Amino acid sequence: MTGNSFGQTFSQISVEELAQRLSSGEQGIQLVDVREPQEVDTASIQGFVNLPLSQFAEWSELVLSRFNADAETLVLCHHGIRSAQMCQWLVAQGFTNVKNIGGGIAAYSILVDPSIPQY
Image 1 (spheres, helix red, strand yellow):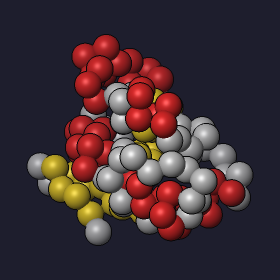
Image 2: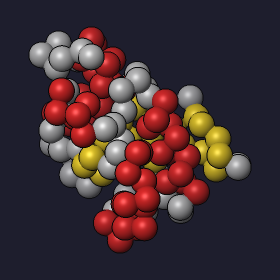
Image 3: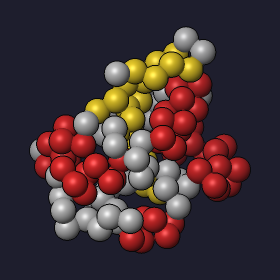
């Protein structure tokens, strides 16, 4: 499945694939969580950098200096909607390998790690 933003695309990965990639210790993946800080406090996956969409004005200008636009970038939210918006924006900024985590942390909690709280 792909998203499309003015002819630019990003792909989607499953939470099961995310779990496999995380457990393999693979290096070079950039992990971005666009949920609000209180959501991250409730349920989170280690290794993700929190960039809340509500604080976009505060971090948007730093993204290109903080992240490698050519590195694989996986984006997470609660269900996959906000992360898809972020994926579209990253692609528009020149990121070349962006993937939305389908189902978000809610699906991760149900399908991969039930110790992560639902909210």
